[in-house]
Length: 232
Image (cartoon, rainbow, N blue to C red; front, side, top):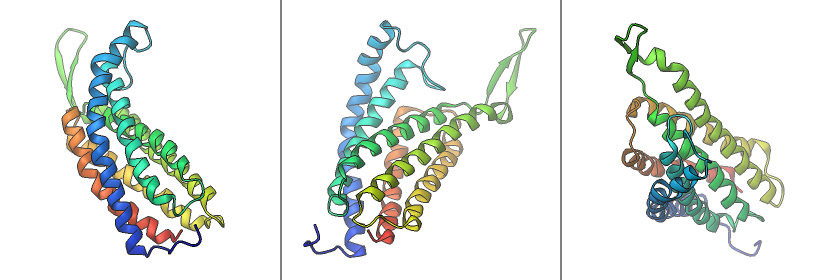
């Protein structure tokens, strides 16, 4: 590993961006198939076995299973392609695939649940009449799902930092790892804000897929710059 010529900051940047985008492109193709399989086949089996009854958060059983399987497929391919870059920089880069797959699957599920959380609607009064509920009434649900999404970003950043720290020849200085940890928190926080502002509880799997496809180049560019700044 030491005999290989080191990449320049620009060289590392474009390789990371390319790996992330290619991984996402391949992953989305398999992810759509995995999501549909989860919704229309695996979920039926889980429901019959009593393992999935009401779903999780704002998502019913079918959507929950589909999102988990789809997110897992996409994140695995992204992690695999990023591994091809990191294997030249870290001693144990294979762990990156595992922690990234787990972390991004949680992010995908939490983001979808937040997108499905309604901001407006109607409530039934005691006398049977209807009254409109506004975003203030839905703040507890929105805040809970937003916190779950941010928590996913924190866990993802922490696990990836551990892989980077353990994989460098001389343990990476804490200040360098801080940049990667901060990156994940800030990006996921912005994702939560964007989802609340864009979807307003009217999310659909088709729209969420496009949201992540549009988010990926932004993530790839910023994360590549951060990785280059860390000078591993």
